Length: 152
Picture (cartoon, rainbow, N blue to C red):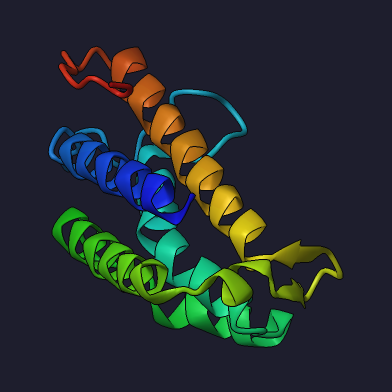
């Protein structure tokens, strides 16, 4: 199972990195759907997800997570891309060394949901895919000619 997660994370991260290339200053602060995140806010969130979800796995409190988000807000699209890629590398490194026992280990999030490590990895994948699709859709709504295959 873990090799499949790693394979998916690598593909997902490649496509998110490609999507970042379509974001420029002309559109980054646009909000294609009223009352939803802007393009920039989606990019920031994507940049933060890999490391943030690892910190949640490590048992960070709500206060610690709030501090993480505040202290790790990228300032440009290049910063966001680099932060995302660094987080993905850290996540992949963890995945590559997880044992069966570690995958089965349970933990409780700061919002009191219980997960096994394996289940949390599935949550990370779905979280990334969700926001990847959101950014993809935003780019299409902003008339960007996006030529990326999201699923293989």
